[in-house]
Image 1 (cartoon, rainbow, N blue to C red):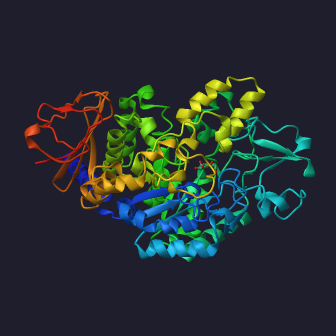
Image 2 (cartoon, helix red, strand yellow):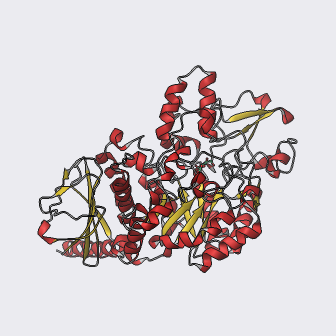
Image 3 (cartoon, helix red, strand yellow):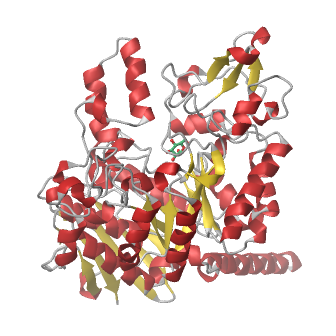
Length: 578
Ligand code: GLC
């Protein structure tokens, strides 16, 4: 009897703890959980001086536009000094601004202008690698006993060829490059102009932390950690299974995720981040599973804040290929793991992805607007911080370039060259790039229908998508039903409805191949979201009596009755359940 009593007490205690954990996510409020973060690709946003490249003054001139979107923060892709082999992801000086983009004075003005408008600024932190033109590397390669030698990974040639490592942007897909100056190979997971920094060296780590403080002391509001999972590697460089090549999630596991990864992030937290408690950190590509992703952002571990995992974008080329059920399962699996602690991001596109409407929606004239609005609804109603890529608020589409000469991206260009050397099918590659290349989302922002879409008075660094005449901000400003105004409306609505931020997520009608249906629930308020991801009419079985539906938002202008539970093509409904 005694035993049973104590068992009951234990069970009771466990239930109470579980319940208090259950509510932890919702009570642990943070500005960055509530934020909508607008990503700006500075090279393509707005050019102020007519040299064809977007710049900081250009962004400053558009601050009122950014403010009008209602977003809380901007994530700015790298603006540091760089020879631009990978558009700024190859940094030659971490404390200077890229000449193409302006000066430090411009940067200070931009930051001030944002803060005056209540918008926070998140910078990119690219510290897995630097540029080969960075002074650290220039020194490092000079001699084997140079003070900076161990800032990078070197493999002396007398040890023979280093074990093969795949490289993202190398023409020969080989991450080791021979450097005659010291008869050694250096490691570059990305292009040969992006040598990997050696985080095992405490001096290097200290330099990075000092540099982070330099920017945080200027008042920036956070960092997006670029390719950070690669900062710790198994530096014995064992031979790896060949099958992992081209499988991004596998590559993370084998190439990065080294034995000291969490230790270094924790050190970064205690040395830097903990001293700036209000800043936000976003973990790019976090983890190869929900569990692994959570480890980076579990508040008890004192590492980072938001996990930006890749499973939902690395899932395939087009929704029709992988299917909605698989897609729903990814989000649901992650949400389950994160329901009590940690925090996720929700995004469908960025500068490394094609346009969201091309991958998850439909860019035909008939459905482009509807499906863009449907996807926007998804981003703004799921649990997680919303990351929204510039141009998606207009429903901008893939560039679909025909010729390799139209591409500037080191990824597309070098893979093309490699294929050419090996006699591969170049026409098929180019066709594939129309759907998959990240250049698709990097074309200049479409401000209006004047020459070069109002982006520049000069020759744009990358061709403007020719549909700018019909798809542009100016025309959408005037149209209350435009994709742009829909985005604004939903951002505002999300802000006024904490249920969309902190509310519990539950997937409904899982097997439905066309409709993503889920509820969000908080403190007695229940919202049902119905998203038809197909170009057909679709039925949905929510198990909730439609009599209790109060439709509060639709992406269709004319509301239809949902009583017979039929959703029109790409229809998105937000419904309050009474
Ligand atoms: C990240 C960036 C990408 C860049 C790569 C190397 O994935 O988002 O644009 O090319 O890292 O820095």
